[in-house]
Image (cartoon, rainbow, N blue to C red):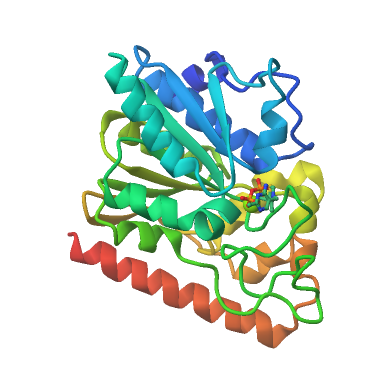
Length: 305
Ligand SMILES: Cc1ncc(C[n+]2csc(CCOP(=O)(O)OP(=O)(O)O)c2C)c(N)n1
Ligand SMILES: [Mg+2]
């Protein structure tokens, strides 16, 4: 086993056993690697986790119970970025400015309801790590469509007879347009993808200013797949180019993981009941949008060469 993987397997975990996430929760894997990765990169810095209303309000537990090995600050839906900005300022005033303030915000709060606060904090270049925990719908309240829900998906507000129309909001490009120091997309679908994931967390840890990480995590009840399939579904999301892994480091775009043999997007869609109603023509249309977005990102990356 390589040294970095050895370290990951043996490291102390900041998401503690006994938490209340569903079986197979993809974000539960992701948050562990975000927190453990930040702690490993800057062992001298404490972490404060800021969580807006989401599944993670429940998973974190009710005071005095805490599912994390770090302090957690729960916020209303729309104010996580503002509260994280204030926490960082207060910590600085108290001589504890080295503390890493991390937001773990769902796609509902980040891409939709709290977006004005996220955009404003990015524009001010607040010194925080903002993580978009992207499970592609409002899951905690029963799978309602968000701006990050993909084209064609079933949700309870976009039933199979009238599934989500229009494409997933492109948060990586939107956040990169703010000119912040670092934007990256992350997914833990395989060991090489995890290597990419941890390198991005380490890169974010060594910078200051507004850092934005978009982490894709599967939701067995919301995406409708068996609980043991979370890693495989995410692997196919990346291997099909449905979810490209990119990095924007001080404005320079890079595609950090290029599938050697990309699989058709239908292989990814076929793993999940939320796409079961799609006809061949709709799948073709999704494939063409996946291809177009890949070309667009490849164009942005080639300009950085
Ligand atoms: C202003 C406001 N509107 C609605 C809610 C109800 N609510 C709590 S969690 C949640 C879903 C959040 O979705 P997302 O941000 O994607 O996080 P996830 O549940 O998927 O982890 C909603 C709608 C709320 N708490 N506050
Ligand atoms: Mg969500």
